[in-house]
Image 1: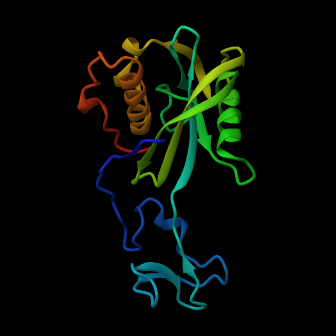
Image 2: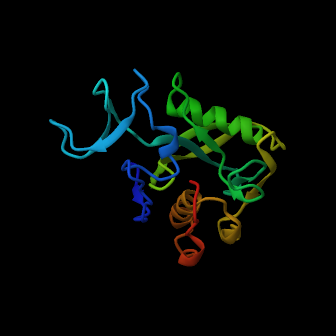
Length: 206
């Protein structure tokens, strides 16, 4: 069973009831082009965006990011030093957005291969992590490496293994990555102390 985690963060909402950075992208109706307004709607239990012309209700839902923690035969986790923004030059587990025509496991295999050069077999779901301000939910699979070789890719500057007691916590790119790695370390090395809570917060991004 996956472990649901929430960061309990404060989300900066704009007048449209969604994260402020997202509002410029959802000002007009995708059906008729009318202006979207935020307010109460009959039959809905919360205020929502809806079209002033055709009445279409615009539901804004989080995006799903699929990631893996590829584990070596020595029990190390393979991380990438990101070559693109956000999180450029910082460490994270491989992953990316789920495509409309693939399962979460297919996405996990594809993203890991694209970013690391490794072929993995996703196993147990380590956790699900909400990042409200970034409007994402991140699923993290523990994965067995079954082929390929670590490589520099278009999205990574470096791919390398880290033992549970050698994870560079201050250099991890994303809050959800820190939380997933923290849960993995607690599972495989419960004797190790958790990272300093001050290192967990990231101002934005996943």
